[in-house]
Image (tube, rainbow, N blue to C red; front, side):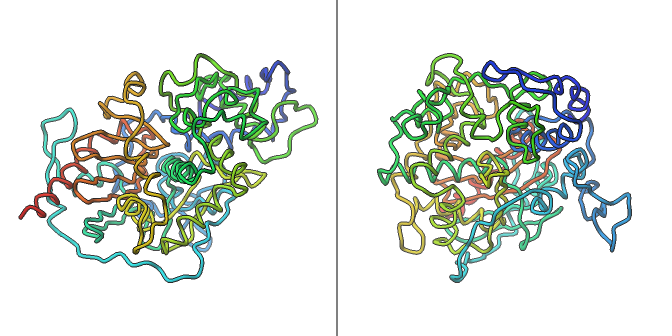
Length: 466
């Protein structure tokens, strides 16, 4: 990926039309910083990486590699503050637990109240649960699937108790891990909460909430179309194309000062205001991360509080989270709603348990049940079908969540490189998982993960039946 970016650097320097205006050439140092920023966005948004025969989970374990150890670390073990270094595999396996050292961020305040406890009753039999990965007849155990998917940490909660907990790679219980696009599902829940409270109307055009977007593609889209990603946008995230809009998005959001000759958009908000429409809204699902940034903007404008404040007040404090979380921000302090959250594994499990309990926690309804039910119902399956997600047949996308529509009613928050919060109401089960798979897109990870989750659900249901 980086080789492709460097190859296209000179083309990018030539400039690109934006709303009919030609921007000037970027200075070399600025181009380097923009490339740094675009790689961050590519990682957050899920652009697949082309990799051949990556090192195994054991061989690439940051502890075995010895990254950043020593005072100072040896030169060949330093991970540099250059995206061309820290986002390469296997270094990214260290990076996922250390975003706060590498990117500007704001904390998600947990307050001063006591930590809510998750009872622990570990079941060693789960390691031996066997399943068949998708498209193969070879059986695999739950334990073997962890390394196969480069798992950094996984927690299984059953009936409110932790029955399985595992850490590896860069992560331990005290650490935080990048959640990537799992962040979107937090944004979706906040959006649904404000709808349930009457602060937002999902049938209103986005332009009524954010006048700056009236003339953009988003202005005529309803909030529901943004939440379900059924907007029709003239926007490409093809990093290999030097004319792709991702380059302009990166240039706009890059916190480095712009040269005097630059005439393009100067912030993420300004970029979003310039996105044009391509087709009719509401016809089909197309996964484009800028929808989440628009949703977060609507939330902030309608409520007077940004996404980070809502996370703190509506989730982190009421749930008694174990740790503060980190949220990446741009030069204006705007949260990267598309995928900038880092949090602890147990806190991810707490969030999943909140969803499983339909917004209730310790006897209090802290999230309207109506908001959770809207997410559980999923999106329009007919609009999802044409998107071609072969590992999610019959699935849907709605409110920034993925629904499997299987017999257990499972639904999930999903992020690139293997991040997930998987909720199975029938099994009374939540699985929170962090990983650092060398391939970013979930189609490479689902064949092991999804049948493994179902196998554990079946095992736990079997225990209940005895």
